[in-house]
Image (tube, rainbow, N blue to C red; front, top):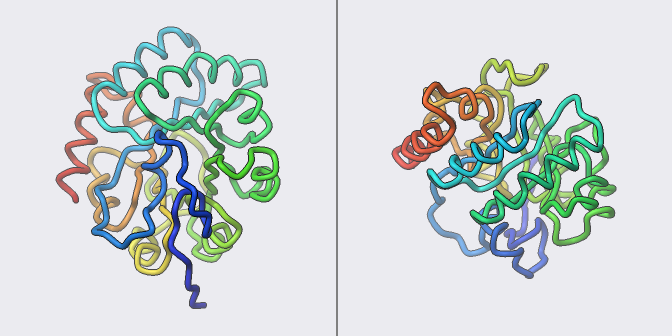
Length: 244
């Protein structure tokens, strides 16, 4: 199936309004230019026992290099724990111009003032998330290893699509394994950005970036780095710059 997309400016589609400055790095401009370097997209650990300590670690990580977005993903967690995490971490991210996205829950994203939400195939629909969050929110959709799911999400107005897992990962259970070729095909045919997720480390990030990822989503490779999260961000920035 051949799909022709209009260029994206801000939110997916033909809306010509620019998103807020801290979100602009998450959307591809409408003018055709050389593809910018792949950027880092951080995902929190699934559990954060000490929010104050993690906020300090996050601050150091964001000060160490370029990060496009922070996805707050706590599982399992009740609403109170999720809201507390957003309250503690969102100001740290925004101080560095980093977009704050909440995993799965558009209702809590709106309630807590997040910049957007990342939804899976079994979560709230894209239409429902857009209804809850509004036209300016950033909404990303997990599409596993399926171009069809990704094209459907793009057509429905997603701001980005996420492919993966590309490699084995202990962060979450995965039932799908994407081939890096899907990133190259996406770059050649579709305008909205793509995020690569699942098992991405310093050893394989360059391959994924060169394949066509606009962003690499990383969790354990940053938070469990033996030299700390700040060192990991510096190293990821160097790897991604060299892969450009």
